[in-house]
Amino acid sequence: MIKKFINFTLFFVLGVVIFIVISPYVFKYQKFLPKTLNKEIELINSKLKLHYIDDERVINFKDIKISRWMNKYEFYKILVKEISKYPGVYVLLPESNKSTYVLPFEIRFVDGKFVVINSSCSIEEGAVVSKINNRNLIEYLSDFYLEKNIFNENKQFFSRYIFPFLGEFLRKKRIEVEYEYLGKSEKTIVETIPYEEFIRKEPVLIEKKSNDFADIKIFSFNFLGDKFSEIFEEFENIAKNDDIKHITLDFSYAYDIPIDLSSLYMIMSFLIDKKTTLFDEAMFKFGSYKYTYKNFGELVPNNVTFKNKEIEIVENCSDSIGRLICNIIKNEKLEFYNNYKEIITPWTRLRIYIPSAKFFIK
Image 1 (spheres, one colour):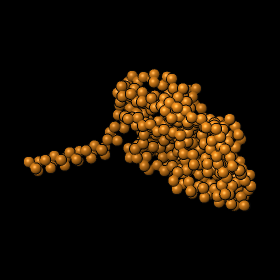
Image 2 (image 1 turned 180 degrees about the vertical axis):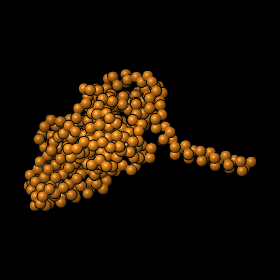
Image 3 (image 1 turned 90 degrees about the vertical axis):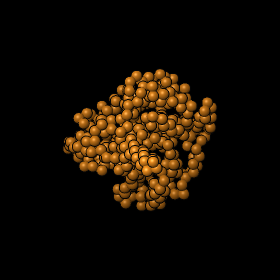
Image 4 (image 1 turned 60 degrees about the vertical axis):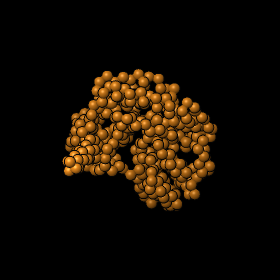
């Protein structure tokens, strides 16, 4: 009797382990009941009302009705179309290191083109991607956005957060890519790779074009962990180098949800030469209450700065922090969303980022 019980327990534990291991693969395209998805919409609506700094905009979101079974990728398309109506709000796909597969290269939308900025396959950095599986890349945006909402920032969001997962949307691991490189049209097949094997582009690339000229390309304003101290040290070395007379700050390749503001304060500390207030006004939402503060975000210059160097900023930028830096320098009007609350839906596991604060340059 005891032996049978032990055998049963072992088989049960083994079954649970196997289920845990294979469940991400089995349930990747699991269909959800309309009732379940409508419950998630109700949840998102309530969180928008609670946290969104522009909660007065949230009028018709709750009226979205799902009438058929959908997997998370189908549901995501509907949510992106609706969420894009609310400035500063974002929705991201869930990721699993082993069961989520992504394309082996990254793109950004720069100067009207989808440019490869990072690659672990045969496609070279600098290539311009035109088609995926014989469909123009720009046409994929219509799957996620209404035509009136397809503007540069959404093209950049698509490039950064949706494009890597196209294989998952298409349910294919082998993807045909058409692109142009060095004036020559190319076509190749790439295989998607597990998310855990994907290595993102370093956030900052600094190149000395000559003894007196440094080019700083920003690919991401999320300077997290050790990266912050590394980048800060590189900026200080440039500031201390009297031979460097000219600096180009290129923000055109950058795009991220502006969750972390350390990069803003760090970069600005090298660009100002006196104590500066970054924002004329800041508004925060806590539940049903909103609080406004004047002259928000005081910043002092770093010990060494770019003060005595000629600085050119490439402003063709869709990133919120990149635009903010440009507008602070030029003292031009801007509204900047921040202080994000992350909401994860209970069934599809989609991640919603809702800004509970807004900063103003007036």
